Image (cartoon, rainbow, N blue to C red; front, side):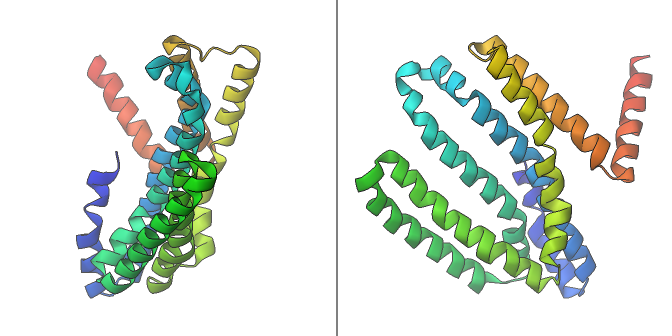
Length: 232
């Protein structure tokens, strides 16, 4: 969903780096990562809650054991999306050597861990062999390095980009958990749609009420007004 936007980041980063506009690079890092997480967090969390039902509906209950593999790859998806803006900024700033070294490390570690862990844990070992290098290369190397070269404090990055998207998950996750616990509606396609509607609605509402900026609220109000006037 976010790839078409992210693909525009390298030329922006290249231009602003040449003009030494660190503040714009910082804003690109903050806002790009924030939007990426606002899209990926609810999708992956929702798939975690409805994954078993979707597997049963799609290929049958005999394959429910694959849910653990799905969970691991959902984590990989989130971490990769969290780092996607950082890697594009590195490319735009021509930090190709660092980007290549991290990619090579991740690929080699992925290969070695996967062929080792598969003997002990089976297919879930292969998934873990992908997850561990992803966590290390993205969270410990790529993101901190990008924050360093654009002079963005890591605490500010976490507070502005990660915290709102993560905290907004609490209320919808609790609501869906309690709904599954007492009502258990996500056993068919209609139930999955109900759960998804509840989750996405609460997630958007929580973010809008507690974390959205005045500019974001203004844009939303203007869009709602234009749609209402268009219907009239």
